[in-house]
Image (cartoon, helix red, strand yellow):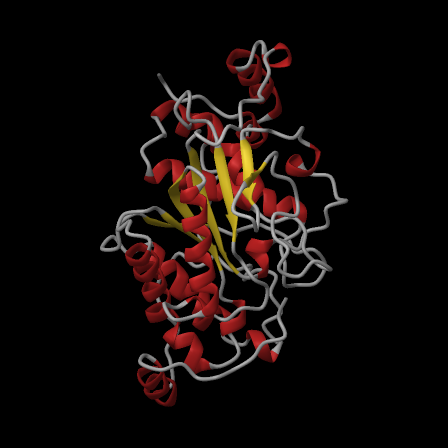
Length: 334
């Protein structure tokens, strides 16, 4: 069966074309139930949501956006702390910091790809593992958040899930000093390798997200080296020698007035950009879809040069020392 264009992707098209495509692809949408069974023996396509606050979500749930006003979809669930799928999935997906948890890219990602899954397998399970303010050290093989995420995936598998991808957005908490920034690429590659090894899935797709470079307050001492970190993310995700890895652009996205976190609207767009990259990696896009959507879901990366800024000699020496052992540190980022 030829792939179809999910309703959530229609928002990226010019309004008249979107209306036409909606009528052509979903002529009976109003009379056909989108609710499916949630029996324990069903296969759930699982996606691990990892990183820090911009993956967990800090957009206000009260703001109107596609993912906050869309009817609940019982094909999309979220893994609960008890290891069971909770349906339908709703914001907030994460409860890392309940007083600030909000809208992130995960749910809109799920809405964008669920119709592309094979008929009979349109059950998508999100595994919330991101934690606000977390440094990448906590996501390395011996880190507490890495171990917790692996355990969550195992619980999801026990509940009938199959790991289909990992979404990653992290790095703001590693921008305070040149040592951590220069070591970031090495550490990120280690995270990718460790997840694939520990989950016994060497080719699981992993989509990395760019930092919000265009709105981050680079004068903030905690974000001084954000450009270096973002360049490391782009370089890693664009490396053809690392299989099934891609980068979702943050170009043009806005913050929620704090110059740190994506707004609700931006989080939704970022979720669709993650979706497009996953669909591309898994061979679910065709020429027609590419022609319809154009570059709206795959804009140029914020830093497409993939060239790292020239580091200082002291920074290089510190980076070499950090490659084998992490410096202790803390962050106030949420």
